Amino acid sequence: MSPNVLPARPRLADHVLARRHLVGDEERVILHDLRSGQLLQLGPREWVLLSAADGTRDVEGIVIAAAREGAPARVPAAEAFFAQLHAAGLLGAEDAGEEASPSAPSGPAGPASPSPSPSPSPTTPALDPGAGDPRERPLEVLPDFSLHCDGRGSCCRIYASILFDPEEAARARALRPEVLGGGARHERAFTPERGTWPCAASVVSMRDGRCAYLEGEGSEARCSLHAIGGPEAKPLGCRTFPTSFIDDGESIRVSVAAECACVLASVGRPGGAPLIDPRLRARRDLDERIDVARLPDRAEVAPGATAGRAELVAWSRRLAAAAPPPDVAAGLSSLAAAVEAEGLTGGAIARFERPDPLAPAALAPWLAALHARAARRAREDAAWRSERDLAREATQWIAAATFALAEPDLLAALLLSPAPAPDRERFYLRAALHGHRLLGALPLSLALRDRAARLVVARALPLVCAEAGAADPACAEPIALVEAALRGHGLDAYAADVARAS
Image (tube, rainbow, N blue to C red; front, side, top):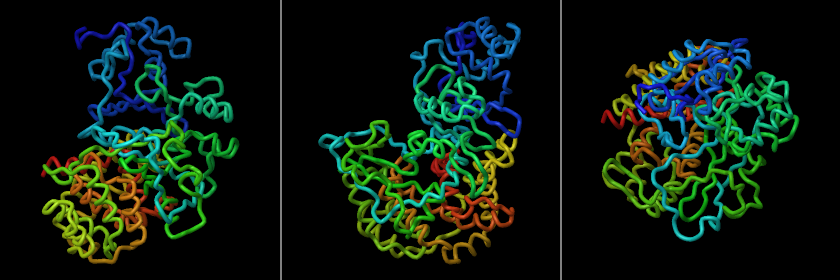
């Protein structure tokens, strides 16, 4: 079929994510194109028409189905609407099997693409299963940490997508049938994870950037599903968040993502909840639905240089055991330079322990690239997100912080000042090392520089929040706010911008 010819039975492509947002009393459906990074805003009537395009109906059938849902349209107008979507590359092949799975977004697709769920699973290249039966690998839990969850739902307000499987969605609608009138009508509370073709997971609608099942404000905010049905009433991603799981060929590392204010507020506080049930000993004991990422057989440690998995795991353990420097960001920057110069040697770790001061000139391109991403996203968000939306606010604060840090004197003064929360920064690195979160799409040396830049932005964020008069409890832990905004809303693609430019 010619790419210029409208499919006989149109449907939304799998590389397009449809997300429903209620802003005040207004319903908006945003289409996120993972390939181009573009956003398209639809009204509720247009979405009813598009949601009927599931690949089984021709345009006349779509119009009939939409009319039954209270969205009448004429066939010529519907044909013109679908022709526009097709011209924009938003429609998929009539047979879902004909379309390749969408690849990970790059370039501007990052800020446009919502994260699949709160669950923090690192992205890795081609995987190697390692030796032995992976199901027998022991669970190695981040030591000396337990979680004190405040229940305020910051994680329910920052991510773009919260996934429910069919059973979880049905349970949620049964417990709270009045939420968005979803009781007997799944499509009133949920949209498909991808496209409009039937898929295994659904995404809950958001109200002012919050999960529709989150109730209350501020310290009174609570998950209504948890309140009524207990923790098992929540979807798996919510129940396991912020725990991460990764198979490094030796064990299953169980760590935590520093994307939740509760994680950092728990640092140094014993007596909280364990990351997993202490009775679980090996991977075979985990719920089979839990996503366990795996380290690749080899990974890039510096541009053009790679190392094997076993070497990387051993290096990670040595670095975790090293004495943390007074300035973790400076340590990461010095370590990056040493890794580029001499690889994964003991000398590189010594540079981490006794780092050179952070140079404003070295940070400048990273801060500029993050500012470009955040500023663009802030402009896009302003067109459709609620002013009460934490994701919109967080992006604005990051854009403001990186803009301020473009002033060399201000950046130099910040770098000369003691880190405001050194215990948080040390834990941030410890958790990342235990969970192998520095190993992914970027070479290790660039990932280290990326993390140094994030910490510097987090140090500047309290000043920005204070100037804006922000009282959101999420502002209490700026590292978590930066981490959640970067991963949850694609701003972390700024690091790839720097890599390409250099």
